[in-house]
Image (cartoon, rainbow, N blue to C red; front, side, top):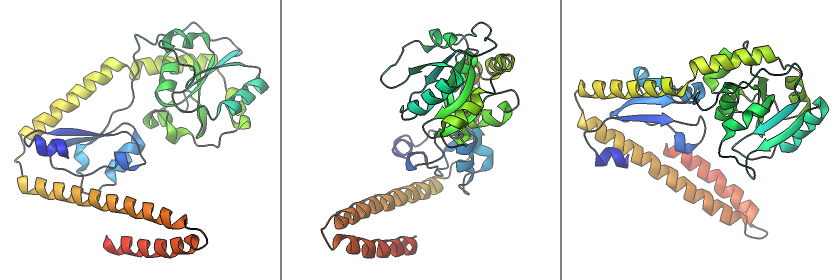
Length: 291
């Protein structure tokens, strides 16, 4: 909003990177000519804002540099080596290790505590990779069989059968539908199919290349600029939208302050718990009435 007010004659493209949490909460502003979700859940979050025109909503999925992540040689008939490949926490490493021991796989880990500058040179040495989101996409482009997995849960082994379902989710958090468990991981490891993994890799390389994605983004910006130039500006509507945005942010800031005070009440010995419950009750009534 600060940028909108500072550049009063400039259109914008707004991108939602997360389908939960306040930082990615969509908001309406007339000069936002395109609202982009990086996957279907993010796009759905944008659509739920009733004042955002559906014609301005688009999806731009993750892409992979196929010149960097090149296909490895044929996978073996039986997997031997596995890699846990993540940029997030490694809270799930013990569960993945347990599943690999049961399945006769030697496991290595790339993530916090052990990073590599050139994962494209490493991935080709593994038959199965446990990953999600862009890490999973890079492993698929490299020809590995991929089981969607993170500390949040387990998804399926990516295959030709489920690719169309998982691709709009960016192979990400929304695809991790089962609780994290060694049994669940073992079931997915048992679905290993070297021929199908090669087919998945070919499809990723054909449909998710970085160059085509960059051209798609450039086209989206050209469309946004052209639409803005053909639209009659309504400065009153812009000021009303800015006021609504700032009012909402002010309310959110007040609620953060009130939650902090409730926590301070709770810390008072003996009487703090009761006072906290009473204050919380009245805070909720004020919140609902104030909206």
